[in-house]
Image (cartoon, rainbow, N blue to C red; front, side, top):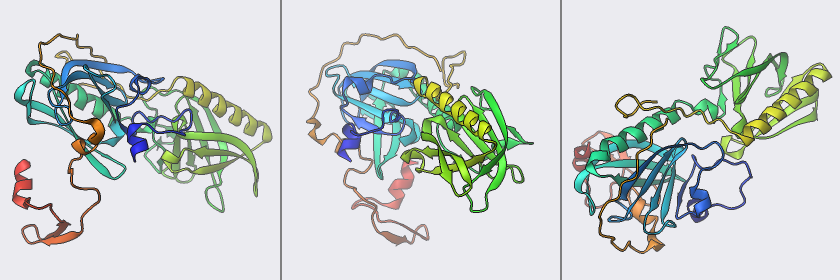
Length: 351
């Protein structure tokens, strides 16, 4: 857990962790953008109200994550991948810098732990903060096919691939047998700039979309059906080994070379598919918004000991694992046992 939160080791070179992990106090290289990561918005004088109340910093909104960096010490930072985010809301909070104001609440789940982050900006920037984060997060959620392996999705309409906004098809290969079942299924390959898609000719809903981002290897191997194209996916996508029979041999080699080449091109310059553009008011609308940094006279408050950095962000700081279920007479349902001093009525009052 600590390795994941403070910087993992032993990762594959092309593994994209930025949108899938939460990290604290990373080195400056990890805080900086990776290939394909775009800086969408920068907000100055934003406080990490929960973990560093009174410490102003810079909040960077990219197409993959939120990054908060303390102005006092740049090694005090947080990276929050959008894949870990469960909700983004605006609620009241008390800040040492801005007093009682509206703050951005970001609820997350990572490695079966729930974390809560509260970011507070000056009152004249709070709406912009919420609008930008919510808009980018929505754009991330709506573009998962660029990044996630998908089985049996709504990918095909009348034997044609439903193209994504930034997608371009390079090849369509007929007569491709999927070897995922014992008997095999005859289908069609679509090879594009962001993924490989196969679907069964008889049942369009039986299909698979394999983004290049999730491919671990592409090889030609021997199988009981003869030589086959084998695509291995990353552990993050389930670690599948998908086999496809392509005839004749010349077509198999052509498909192998094309997928390998496009995969290498994608790895060098990934397309994550998160498009965000501000509307006329500069508020949330699905990409590029830059807020000029502003200087603010603030009192620097010595931050608490970072040795307990994780505990400060737990949505329930006393909780490590799920509690046993108990019957709740008020709801007529089995619910997780509440911590001492908390009632169902108090939970509903939050809403």
